[in-house]
Image 1 (tube, helix red, strand yellow):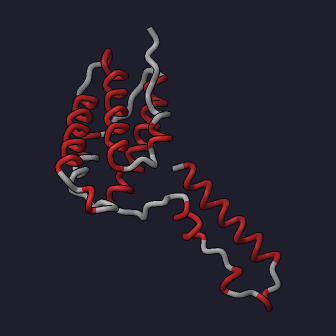
Image 2: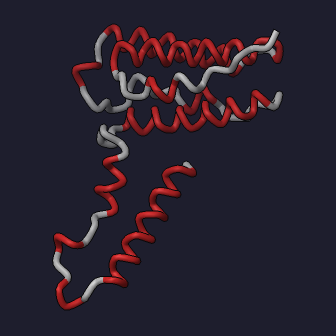
Image 3: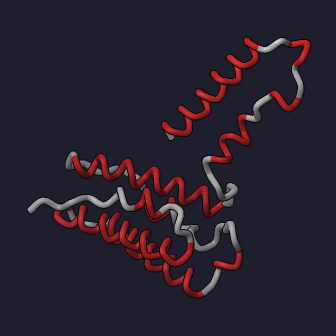
Length: 157
């Protein structure tokens, strides 16, 4: 969320700067930067319900990683928050098949295991969840793999 806020604030600063430096008599529609379009270029898939849910999940798991590395964890009700994973509108409806359903059900099972885990298994169950994300994205949507690879926690022995 911080990155999005930074991008939005930066765009408004740029827009303000361009507006202040432009000659108002020569301003045209082509010279006005559409901030919404610039923001959308950072997210190649339009905002389907599933893509929004996935971005929320990424933010939550990234925050959870920080907490877990400090021997803490969030109070998110993971099961309720992501229960609609299989029913939300997808960016590409052709992906809505038995394979996606299997990945989704696996993820929801691992999410439940993570939420109900013991302290001793919290990091390993978190890592299983992230591995499941990777597996699904290798089959359906390769783009996020780069950032998902940054989410696992190395377990020190």
